Length: 111
Length: 111
Image (cartoon, rainbow over all chains, first blue to last red; front, side, top):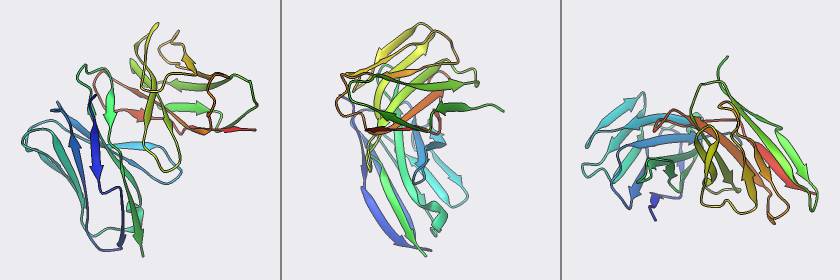
């Protein structure tokens, strides 16, 4: 079945360092969505990318959708302790009935 | 105040007992979803519903049941057939093919 993998599984950075998580799908995606889940909380929608090669920015966060629409990345510039959490990517399944979530990347930021 | 609510926040289940988790949304979303999350793990889809009076099994439906009698409500019953029910249960809703909005979750513990 359709699979979405993320790397790394876990990353620990010092505050101020940059961070990137990569998302790879086994199939071409019509769009890619990113979610953030704080420790003990629920996933919160961050952004959706639709076009091949699309790049979107939200303050220190940069999201990119690959040219082949099978991969995506999230880059955080100068991390802050408020960035702590698990970041999930997700794409629609081939029937557009549901989302297939990635395995997630857990980010820990030390002050 | 629009949103998606889940109750209770914590739920304790005794052996052989069925328990029902509530999920309500006033976002006028057609689609609703139930996920299970184990500690340090990703999201696994239990059931989903694209429209009232219709729902489909997700990846781990065994031991669970749902109903969708109203657009606003999508309760999940964890039956006694689910032998390892301890987990964090998340409900979400969305417009068709759109971003998913999650409730705060219910933590189910077995006594």
